[in-house]
Image 1 (cartoon, rainbow, N blue to C red):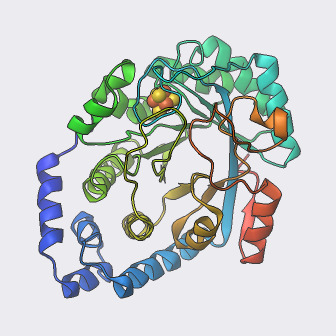
Image 2: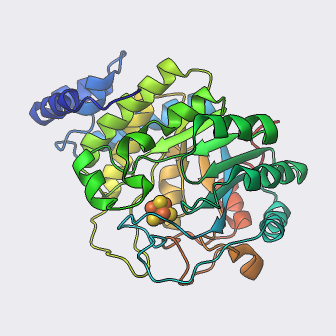
Length: 369
Ligand code: SF4
């Protein structure tokens, strides 16, 4: 099992801290860009000129590997009950908000509305609750989504046992799983996850490996930007991803970049990662992992999303509602007290597709068959 090597991470961050601007430029242009060059390319000394350089290289590598295709996906939130108490999340069990659980029929109704918007790539999302992660409930739902012609069905729910993932693959053809460690720093992890099963750091960390062993073809990982020092988190994430690619090469891994956002009824005192650090992080990861898919969510505002898409992103969420049942009410994202976090980009899927077209990108609604 992957275990973060904090000593190695600390040494790499120290090397980055001691680097000169010349060292940084050499690292960015290095033919054998490895973990050391990655750490150096996140140096606090990076100025706007060097940032443009690293973002430029990242853009070139992304075009070379992925062309101008950008896949669109949409989350379907079906249950906002949760047994965990993540202090940064509006769904946490200590937050006194109304809870909504969609039935099988209500989920399918939401999915039909989503299909009407052309999406073939769907992500089922729920808070961590035994009923929302009951595979006897999930198998028929995922099967029905495939019948509705969704070619890629993924889940973002409570971590499961390897055998349960295997059943979801075998009996329902589950295509993907997203699981974020939130923070690789054990102390911060314990402080922001004070109760519930998510309090178990190792169980969560091993989730991607259990999923890969069970045969899930696509696995997305990441951390929540704003909880820990972003450079340390990035170095740990890079080591985690390298480990997964080496030991579980049968699965395809991707990275997401969720920035912490405000939500109703919780402590909103976290300081999120600045825009320039976000760009730096995405670009440096692209240099280290030229072939990895990268996802950008509607947590980011439209102008920022449009500006950073070319740098490295291959998957975009669009028209998202983080409210269970939100599509049936509005047909697209709406703001209300049940949201997990504030959606910043509330453009319709068609508006986002038109924006991509106008910038010379090809919006792709279908993942693969
Ligand atoms: S982040 Fe996930 S596990 Fe934590 S409270 Fe929110 S929904 Fe529950």
